[in-house]
Image (cartoon, rainbow, N blue to C red; front, side, top):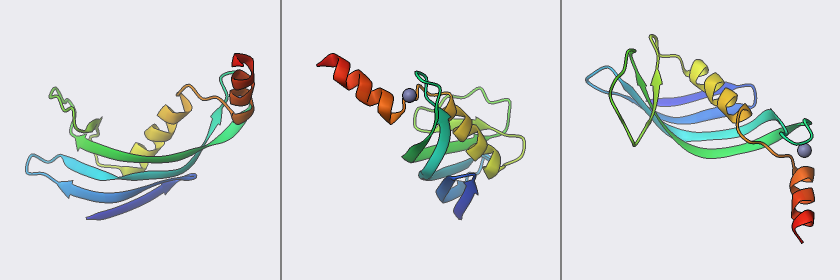
Length: 109
Ligand SMILES: [Zn+2]
């Protein structure tokens, strides 16, 4: 089944397949941008996102292991929740804005 969901400026587009065991596999692309805070100057900026994603949505409690997919535990399959938590984890990344990146570059040489 084709899926497409947008949360704020982040869009997830791809295919979802339901497995016999009830888990749902989503493969696709995450594109758009997320407002993040620079870890150096604390300024907000839009981080461009363009990445391939592979999610496996499972019923909790999940005690398996999967090195191919990102495991997402959900009582009820909710694509928007997945997008929200992706946006959240991007916000918690080590984000450095362009001008701070340039500054670092200049310091090195
Ligand atoms: Zn900065």
